[in-house]
Figure 1 (cartoon, rainbow, N blue to C red):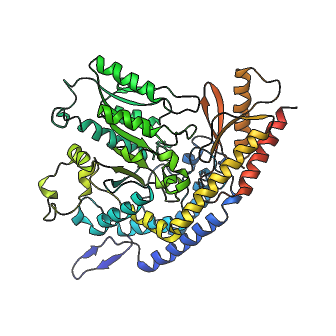
Figure 2 (cartoon, rainbow, N blue to C red):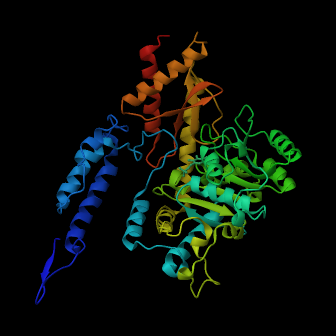
Figure 3 (cartoon, rainbow, N blue to C red):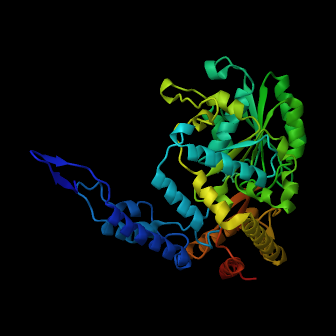
Length: 490
Ligand SMILES: *Cc1c(COP(=O)(O)O)cnc(C)c1O
């Protein structure tokens, strides 16, 4: 114990928090540290040069028995932690899908830790509930969704989609809530071959099983083929299987392809099947009028997930599920024990009714900070600039004789590979491109990742990070060309 206070007759010990003066001192130090980190981010290698186990080996095997000075803890951030950090905030992070955090987002996160409220029910923090409701109405407007959609914040798109699939199942009215899955006819969910693995994980979690997921083939642009979807549904119905959910994706993870939501929605409407749309990464571009073509028919979906924590500079984690049928999510999950009943239940939103978790963080704060600090107009400009840079990179690939593009670039992600003159053997091309990616990443100057398209090793380059500018894209392109030139002479 740090603070011992002597009582009258006996020694009493009080556990006390960090004193305010100390909190102020280290708080300011840490904010300074953060400002310097973000301002100087480009001096770090984007990928750390560490072996598995290396960071663990520098950490004590058990927790300290006695208090440690804050100086020592902060010193270890630089000494032990930083060398093993992959710098997601780095503008040369062009891997996966970016998640970058802006200043206002970070400050919003700080404040949510300071309040440390738990938004189980309205009563447990009215501001949490009502700010979330308000900010999600703003966001619904940005997404051009009609007023009959309402939103709820979950941690990740995986969890949002799992709740959507659960609602789809509940909408069948098969009494699964009471009886579970035993004795239920086989249920089927459909998504494209390019849907995110989280859809199958949702099906796993809910007892649908991987067998309960049918992957619909895609066309040459990696978009789901609606006629194939229809065929699969009819085949299942003829065999006594119940089609209950279709997941379409706007911006698939490998190529950012866009499933034809409007045509898929028509099939779902005819067959009365729940349509969930996964826009985890690209969904935020619904706020750009010029992208509206990708979102045609979205208003006909039953649910839609979008992650402001990916492209919109909100720190992880913050995913929004919009749905036209919140009452069905509530029917699937609401279970109110006596100790959580409140006098306001009939007039407020109690977010615990809309999912498996009881406690929830004050996530809306950081989204509110970001939307207000930048304003929608600047956020739109950021998205537009990333799309411009993505298109620019794609055009460089198209113009270069030693490279080829392997998928359309509807947003700002380019799928490409090196294909030098005379290289025809697909196995050798795969080896060449894997080597190219690994050598580029080993420089620490750029981080890119890959996928496989029709058996071809495909490099992805993603522009959706807050700090990415044209010079970073140019440098990346130069580095990729130079690296290839090192082991392929033309
Ligand atoms: C990133 C992504 C996901 C998963 O997102 P999490 O929030 O990490 O669960 C799901 N679907 C698509 C299309 C994605 O891009």
